[in-house]
Amino acid sequence: MKGIITVLGKDSVGIIAKVCTYLAEHQVNILDISQTIVQDYFNMMMIVDISGATQPFENLVEELQQVGEAIGVEIKLQHEDIFNIMHRI
Amino acid sequence: MISLVEVQETNKMIREMNLDVRTITMGISLMDCAHTDMRIFNQNVYDKITKSAEKLVKTGEDLERQFGVPIVNKRISVTPIGIAAGAIKTDTYVPVAEILDKAAKEVGVNFIGGFSALVQKGCTKGDRILIDSIPEALAVTERVCSSVNVGSSRSGINMDAVKLMGDIILQTAIRTKDRNSIGCAKLVVFCNAVEDNPFMAGAFHGVGERECVINVGVSGPGVIKRALEEVKGQDFETLCETIKRTAFKVTRVGQLVAQEASKRLGVPFGIIDLSLAPTPEIGDSIAEIFQVMGLEEAGAPGTTAALAILNDNVKKGGVMASSYVGGLSGAFIPVSEDHGMIQAVQRGALTLEKLEAMTCVCSVGLDMIPIPGSTSKETISGIIADEAAIGMVNNKTTAVRVIPVIGKDVGEMVEFGGLLGYAPVMAVNSFNCANFINRGGRIPAPIHSFKN
Image 1 (cartoon, rainbow over the protein chains, first blue to last red):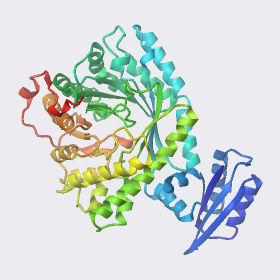
Image 2 (image 1 turned 180 degrees about the horizontal axis):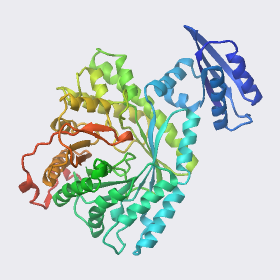
Image 3 (image 1 turned 60 degrees about the vertical axis):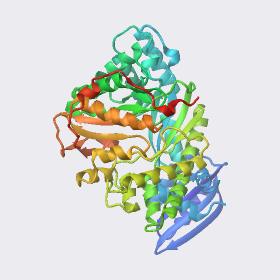
C-alpha cells in the first residue's frame, strides 16, 4: 500500500531529517521525494510504501501530524488512491 | 506516477475550496420488521438499525483519515414508515419516530430519514396515520426527518394530500414555535420523489431497493466556484467545460469513498448523488457561483439560465466519473443554507416567485425558505400544488420545504443553527387560493405520462 506525504510550511533546518527519521523508525520506505521552496515556503511531496509499517495507517496519519506541529509545518499522509482516482480515468 | 501538481491540486481543493464528501447514507429496509404489536415492531426496528449501522460512523471517520478528505455527515434512511408500520394496530406512529431517534443517537448519525409516506395516488390507512403523526413526531424527536410524496408524472397530484400537508406544515410549525418552528426544516413535500436520495430531509429507503445499501452524496459548490474564477469573462463553452471537468473530479472522490465504505461495511454500493449542496459558510455557495458567472446577485435576470448551465454540466461531468449516478443529482438552491442566497434575499434580489422559476431547472425545489408564521394553510398548500405541478409536467423531482416561522414576519431574521443556517423571512403572495385547494380529489396525470 502506498501513501502520499505532503509537507507544507515555513522553511527551516531539519524538516526532511525529522520526517525521514520518523518514517525510518516505523519501517516506512520512501519511494520518491520531490521538493520545492517558493518564497521561503517549503513544499514537499513523498511517495512512501507503508506495507511494512509497524503502525496502522490511522496512527501514522496522526503521529506525522504531531511531528509537523512540533516543527511548525503541516504534514499530511493520505492514501494514494484519492490522487489516482481523481486524476486518472 | 502521481505528480506534485496533482497532489497539490487535490489538497488545495480540500483545504481552500471546501471539497468534501457531504454524506454517507446507509439505506436500511424495515420490511421484515412488520408486526401488529407496536412494542415488538419498535424492538425489531431498533435492533435492525443499530446492528446494520453499528460501524457506519467509525468507518466514515476512518476513511476521512485515510484519504484526508472530510466526510461531513453519516446518516441513515429507512423504508417509509407509512409502509413499514402499516400492520401495527394503532392510531399514531409517534412512538416509532421516537425509536428511530433513539436508534440514530445510539449509532451516532446526525439524521435518520424515512418517517415518510408515498401518497401520490392515494392514502392507505398507514399513510394517513403517518401524516397525522408528523407534527408531534418532529416536535418530540431531534434527528428524525420526514417526507411525503404527493404527486408524480405517472399518477398526477393527490390534491387531498396537498391540502392536508398545508395544515400539517403549519401544525409542525406551531408545535416547534419555541425553536423558530424548526420542525418544518425536517419535513419535505415531494413530487416525483426518488428512492435512493442520500440527502436529508427527503431521504428514504425506497421499496425497490435492496436490504441494505450505501449511497454517497458529494458536494462542492466552493470547488466549482473557484474553478470558474480562473476562467472569468470567457465564453460559455469554456464555462461549461470547466464545470464538467471539476464535477468529474469531485465525483471521483465520492466514488472512491463510496466503494471503500461499501467494502469495509460489507454492504453493497448503491449510487453517487452528484448534488451541489451548499452550506452557510462563505465560499460554499451556489449563489456565489452565479456571481462568478457574471450576475450581480442570485435572482437577477439570467439566474435561471445560469442554474440550468450549472446543473446540466455537473451531471455531464459526474456521469462520466461513476456508473451509478442517482438520487437528486444537481444544484440545491436552499435559502437559509446558502450564504449568497441569504444575501440576495436581504438585498431584495431574490423573491419566492423567482425561486419557483429556478426550480424548473434545479435538482429539487423550494428549499429552506422561512415564510411569515401568519401564512394560511391554504396558501402553503397552494405553494405545494404549484411546485408539484412543475415536477409532474416536466418529469422531474420537485419539493417544498418552507418554514412558516410562528410569530415572525417578512424581513425578520431566523436562526436555525448549524448546517440549517439562517435567513430572513420571505414574502408570500397572500391572495386567496382556498377555493382552489378545497376542491380536493386528484389532478390527473399529464398526457405524456402514457409511456408503456
